[in-house]
Image (cartoon, rainbow, N blue to C red; front, side, top):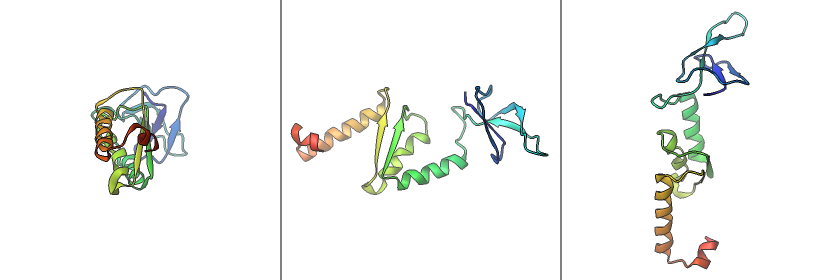
Length: 132
């Protein structure tokens, strides 16, 4: 569960020192404290089947497309569309991405296969691979 509550239009966000009870962009028991508002707050945690909010997804895609490198921390990269974001840095052939995760998953296995094939295609020996 997350630590965020927000208004549905996300003009205001509240960060708590406790977990919000709901998940899936549902209303929470709290209300907006802004003068004259009082609207019910919603959690900001998407469930597996929920679409990512465009307000977060669209800028993330733009940033990945222009990034020199994308760092993916602690993720299995299994859930779309988020798992495709790092790949957007590869468009044009100049971006890179790094995965830092304890999990061994199919994406990393595929990347290793491609890297091994790339090394074979270049006919590099182990000393040259260290420089690569």
